[in-house]
Amino acid sequence: IVAFTDVDCIPEPTWLAELVEPFGQADVKGTGGDIVQAERNSASQRWIVERRFLDQQFNADHAFLPFFATANAAYRRSVLEELDGFDEMFHHTAGDNDMSWRVQVLAGGRLVYQPSARVQHHVGERATEVTARWRRYSAGIYLLERRWAQWPGFPETPGFWTRTRRVWELPFALAHRAATRRPMSIAAIDAAVALSSEIGRLKGQLDARTNPVTPLRDRSRQQRGARDTLR
View 1 (cartoon, helix red, strand yellow):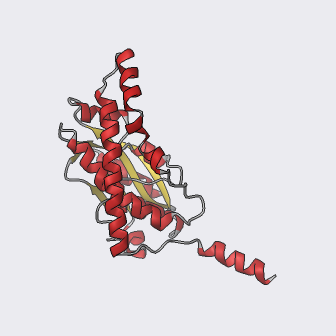
View 2 (tube, helix red, strand yellow):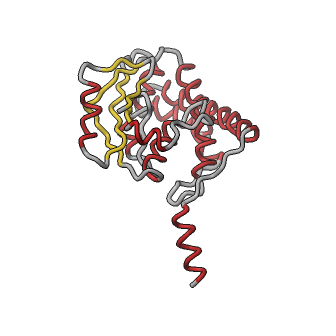
View 3 (cartoon, one colour):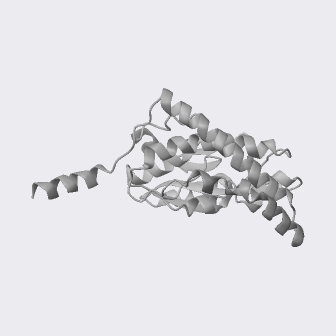
């Protein structure tokens, strides 16, 4: 078993034992544990909690397939070797999404969310801690979309106006939060993150031009279609 965490995470004492426990089941090829935001002093730290950034339950419930951030994840060494490891194309981020999905659709493995395997995630207090992360994240997500868009069940990419709605809605969001006596900083960070995300997507587009992304296709579906044509 190969377990992963990040330099800004501190595992709890029982982390590793809890994380590897589901591997007693033969079909389990990967696990993910809980990523707990350690500090909630600043607006950006509270935003991480409110918007469920790096929330592994949220990741496990993804509309396409479950995935786990490598801030708290583990895989069988055999499946990592079978899939030739993480794809270096995702040098910004999103390689963990890609690995989780390849484990499931290409290696036939099952992922298990193990919330009792916890790491404490430490993030600085500045808003740039969030916006810079989202910029990198969005660059990787653009490449991820290019790779997986043609796979059955992959959700359609939201359009520009949908992705940036937090910017256009900011005056209304601020007014609503003021009226309900909720922190207005959350709405402001929402808008900043949306803008940072678009900058990241532009970087992803440039990367895709330099290193074109080959879409993954469901070969079994293509083979069934070819057989049906022959009939």
